[in-house]
Image 1: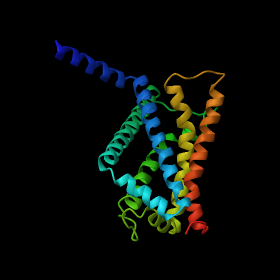
Image 2: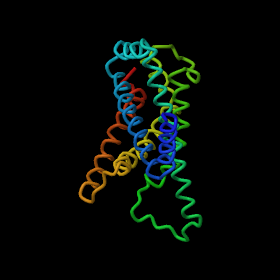
Image 3: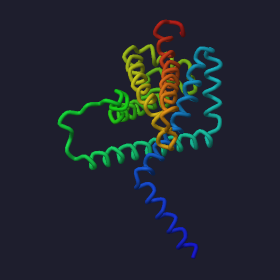
Length: 227
């Protein structure tokens, strides 16, 4: 009996995921997890303005609990995979629903951010891989010293092409977030003519404040504010 119930529940979960609503729900939940990580990561990066002692201690604290660190990394990895999978699936369903493209497409209600979500996603994913190899493993960082987060960040961003690419990708993430945050509210059913404009404004402001925090680090290094 328990096996039958378990199989029935698995079938329901599978059907839920196969539905458009299910995919949007997964996009919303994983997006929220990744958004929360970005906030925490930005606050961690801003510790560079407090000096090497504070930031290096922060890095040592994070790596001092391997079980917690790898649990968070696993959750983030699964969230990224599910987020991309749901996004591609929704895009495929949309293409199947309209196999013949518009003769002339008028993007009346859509924004540039919403129209480039499928483009910005892969670019951001590729950047994340490079970013990990650059500042987490040190593979692409010739001056990398483990747990010396302050020095690694400063030396990494003193390489102008790396800093410029970082800033450009951060701007792209800003557009991705500005659309993704309010889209997340829509996916969970929180949509109302009265409140939607306010949610869009909140999403845009919050996204660009967050991205401003990230960009401030390479700018501070390049201008000599942080040495």
